[in-house]
Image (cartoon, rainbow, N blue to C red):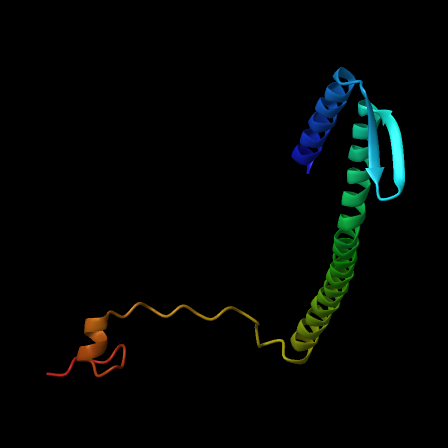
Length: 133
């Protein structure tokens, strides 16, 4: 975006410099309309009209993007609210579980000892049993 703005400003400066160096009277004819002015004025008007048309053409896309961004921000806020509610609910349920069954501890799954492939194949698939003779 900033690079485009820099190129636009550089183009405008170059156009104005060109217009100031070519200050001759010109006549613009469009159907039945006739306009007499200097070349500088005609070029500045053309650049201005081009900028206005570009702004009008690009404004629907900009507005659509702003609407989409606002919708996504609302969606993120709603999901964060749901997450907070669910986190609170999990805390309540864990406290209830500890109150009802204090001997049952909520712990991660116990790690099983590593059993190699050779041991599994020779013991009939049961870890810890003796290999078949």
